[in-house]
Length: 288
Image (cartoon, rainbow, N blue to C red; front, side, top):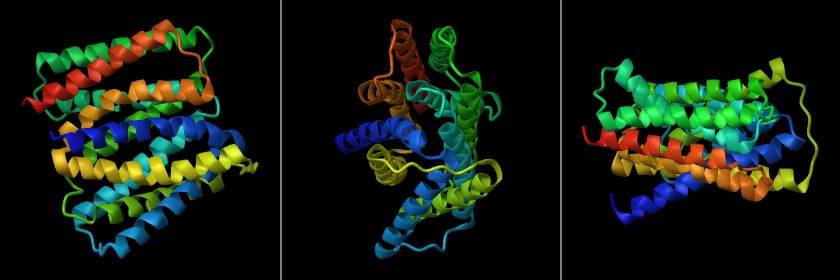
């Protein structure tokens, strides 16, 4: 892996992790499903427009259309929609930690359901991940965490895991930015329907909302997704996924810095254990 790929991987981890903190600012002044659907409309139209200017086509292969739809529904609508709703009551750092378990869930799923061989290092990584999450959740439950919100985050992580497994290798063939933009528009459509069915829209225009919303649309929403697809195309999905081990660190660090969320000793230890588990699982899969 060359230095450029490493820098892009670290940049992706920072952008991805920061989205939980910006989401907390957004849901404080706007209803979550409405805000997220508008975000996807803006980011999706920008992505498609830039892709057209770059000469990309929306004449995708059947596999690309399937991947676009699956990611749009499972990742953009289900995963992020559930997280936005949850973060009305759940701290950004905890939501980031739960979401960061996705590589562990993928590693477990391909081992159990797809018959992929997992080395002892990978098995140890899965066990470490479980221990780390248990340590953090034990500390948070003792302080009165909202279990309903935690459950929404957990279901969201499962949805992201399913999306990752269902579209493995299906996005190859070019038109990356077009795929990203169309995924977001699919997510927008699904979330708009959910807004009509389940939410009473609210909107309180404030500067924190404007700044967080703009940042979320352009950086985690569009730029991070483009960087991820670039990284996968350059080094492969398994190697690219190694950078997810940085997400727990950056997730809690950004939340502590911008939201002043408390960070106890058990949280720090749990984050280190989870990050080590993610790295072990990814390294184990790379060596096969």
